[in-house]
Image (cartoon, rainbow, N blue to C red; front, side, top):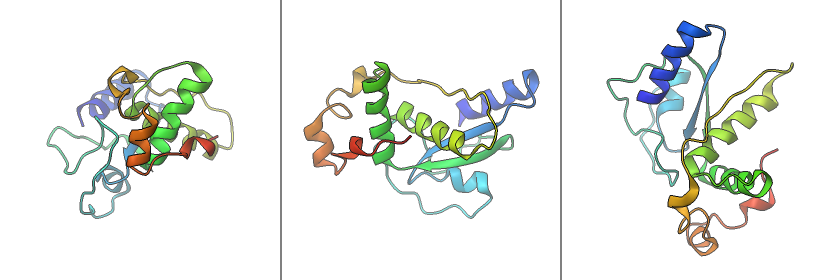
Length: 149
């Protein structure tokens, strides 16, 4: 909660027209909070480092305009696509953020400048995200065949 809260406050001061969009792993409760829906029972997800199963006291979602729920298959496939197409070795949370940014871009009717973050390196995930056997064991193998566009 601290990252989105801090960034949204910073952008509100320096660039008020900037839209803040949240990427939330499927199973987390944050997207429901942004949409004003009742919080679902928290699930589980394999993307590491983002998402919440409760609303932390520090969290301020008041400036977040929309949220995209991104499942583990899309997050992992997007991170692997980033490596294949751009040579950027990033982690699963970066895959989640990039997948949400791509969804946001596809929903726009006119060109916009969109910024996202590569918030983790893939070095820590060589035995998970970049291990085909681990992906297969977790039902995530083969998702690269239909990457997000």
